[in-house]
Image 1 (cartoon, rainbow over the protein chains, first blue to last red):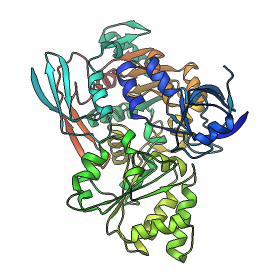
Image 2: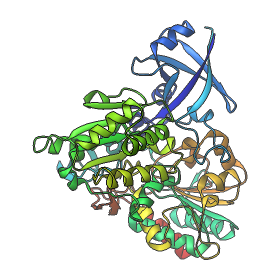
Image 3: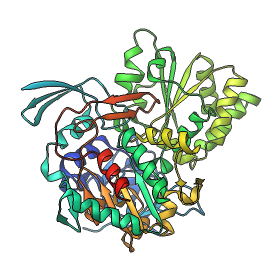
Image 4: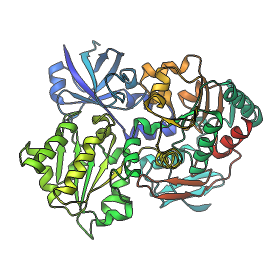
Length: 113
Length: 406
């Protein structure tokens, strides 16, 4: 099963604080590789919180752990800004003056265990 | 044990009511700071996070050797670039601008893909603004594309909302793409789809001019009409939704003033400690806040943005001060930094960028180990007094000595 998602990156105070005190170590990586999604999107993908999904676009692909969040609108995933999600961000001045940190269009698909 | 007061330089709120307890050289307790500020202050104690004072090609060196190597790299460069400085003091920034002039270098900072356009519009008078103390008079606060609970955790509690709530019940509102800690405290929260902000602004203009438009735009206008002095805090969400072009937003502010008769003010939710300081200095000296080349007099344009310089592989030597482009740039762009560019980094902390640099200066942290002046997000100048003595040189000292060297 695959769905289209728009990823919005955001600044997360907890992740930022961990990076200050621990650097880019395990805890920071864990917080940076979580995606918050609408529960209805989890239902569509037939997955549960804690499952892994693969996100891909023309820039590459990454795997993230899913977190259900009723505050998220369907079709939109929220990921803390980091070098991890930046593997998918694009900067093309023909398309836009700024990188697409706030609107990354990806395909999300379930990663089999 | 000693107790000292500190201005937190963890973000551009620059909270000046921070108390710290010190035992010897170690800060053991931090009072009043937010989660981010406390982490920032405690982190300076963690040696594993700090760069050594000087590294040359990965090996520890002394300051003279590191300065000699860096000076040589900058002298030899055909197209040097200076990038960052948003966490440095005004004094260090001024020296860096002088260094750029001397080298005929390009200079830019994170504001070119952050809030630089908003600051420039404020400095030119295109967008009206105000200072934090003036928020006492505000009766409507709109956070647009920003969740201060994560970006600037004490913005609401220390500066914008709670200090004045009893005196005047300011309305709290937000425009965002999801429900947040902030939206749950707002009487009126406007939720948009990602990138829908432009349509929302156009609809607000239509409601004001023609009394027709979408329901949420009508509600926004009704909210404005109840206010005498509304404030919009411009977050990165709005900046990116408008792709850094604020002409439509300016039109909105003018229309609100001219037709509704409401004088509104704007404050950028600037991210870095002293991003606004560099914007101010560059504006005073060149008429622009960022993206400057001193190669042939003063030139300004998008081709001098850090993004374009890296994408086109223009620069052959980059002096990076207090920022980590390896982490913050799109990976497709960051990989260009590996392509034959000499990197000289000034950063108290170990980062992917410092690990890829030929020369690293692990200098003093502004506000904790080094003093100076900085500019808060509302344009107010704040003085930093260091609370710790250190052998590490400040950014100002390192850049001054590079300037002497070149």
